[in-house]
Length: 198
Image (cartoon, rainbow, N blue to C red; front, side, top):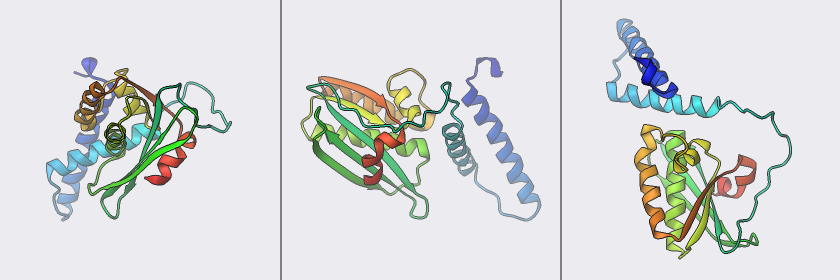
């Protein structure tokens, strides 16, 4: 069965089986039963965090400072990031737009009241970034963030996780309203202003 599955799908199947077994054991010892939908959502969130935390780097770690790089004229760079607030069950999104000389053009700080997982929150940040750029009348842009999973899905290098696939398709559809859109990944140090806004 697993021969035709991706590593992520196999991981999800195993994690769901483990969550069901664990839930059954808790019920056996008198604890309340969790709904199946809640278990599956927890498994997806757990795996998203696991894959994000255990991304294997092919290159040795580089301890040099990562700096923001400007786009080429006439493009603008739209940096996005998200921050999760678990206690409030909310996600903060930050967007910074700068021109080819690094001049600040516009910024956005927005909150979504939803208990999103890590990848879903980053997907919402990319969506907010492209919508904000459209509202600002920008025609050429580089949409940049520090979520490698989302950037690779937008570049169509890898499949989007199921939890963000509709967001990815929506962002790609929004791209039709622009003259030119590029997607770029940057490490967290190069994305600090957007992170602080989030």
